[in-house]
Figure 1 (cartoon, rainbow, N blue to C red):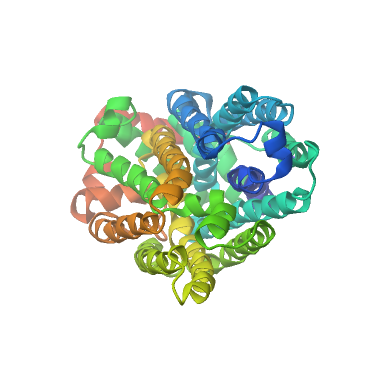
Figure 2 (figure 1 turned 135 degrees about the horizontal axis):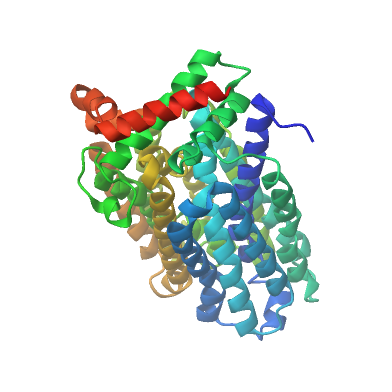
Length: 496
């Protein structure tokens, strides 16, 4: 098979990473439409709300474990091999889930599936960021997020189609269907190269230059490709000169502000989860039924419409993220999310206490869920998966991205675990918690999160160092590293 080059290579990488994101959406939405169905409840002996929360949320614990594992081994294994390992583990987990007959079995199976997803989820954003052009890097991530939302939308309608069936295949078939996407990922991983930035960081600059030529040969001249290669080599040498790369360097206040950048990467992941989005994605059926008062059939139908809207709205940031930038989208849309949750609390209060406007309030509350998910996908979701990979230094990118993803999943677990008991015990007040949290994120992002639109990943170091001293840091590394960088570039040039 001939080597993929140019747009064909970039497109194939994007298909791979998009399927990785589709699986996130598929598994996030999978249980939301199953746990209230007769088939699932018959198989697992009618679990109560606490057990349902455990079965659903334990998947996030697996994702957390997978992200932590990736933080330790992902950088040494490389992007391709790490993703491949995650895919194999997910296939095993899907088979275990689909054959479950007891609560213990399904819990263990969901942990295994989660471990695989945590590995994939920690790595595919890094792979895409290191292949994508700077001018459209945000667009490529938005494409992936549209596939994530398509996964949620698709699985909700699959669950809805099986909801009247009482035999256990009504939930087993949706669970095993994720293998349709996992197996092609294994094939694609065999035909794409490792990322140029990882190759340079692991003493393979000549191979990195060859990959750059395959990727950029149709759009850039030889000198420009050589200059990009030298810039990557210099950045790796500079980061090595200050020791950026070990675990302790994640929290080091060095010249490129590694600690601040790591905290930003973790912060944005934590903020999106504590804002309440997965309380809606995982439990939209429950919210429509318990909070708003719809019957089971209407709740399932409205959940399908809600996730379809989530998918449609995800196309809006395609045209905004690389034009307007990350910060304006975050600040404006999180403000909308805070306002919507405050209004939602007031509306659910009317429904819960059956006031004279309870019916109208229920309709308005349903509309608020649509507005909230639209604002989330335009602002938060469009940014949260590209930003950590952009903001982190190259030698810390895999570790930092994995830890930030682990923070995402453990906060996801927290939200998914507490939502059913919160809806049962404190009702409308649950939405006040999310309103306050979203309001708190706005000033933090305004003060501490910089804009990364249009920057090469190597240029982000200059952004944090500051314009005055950037050239000193990037181009006056210790002599041994500078000489090493120049010799690598020269040898790569001679090998062409």
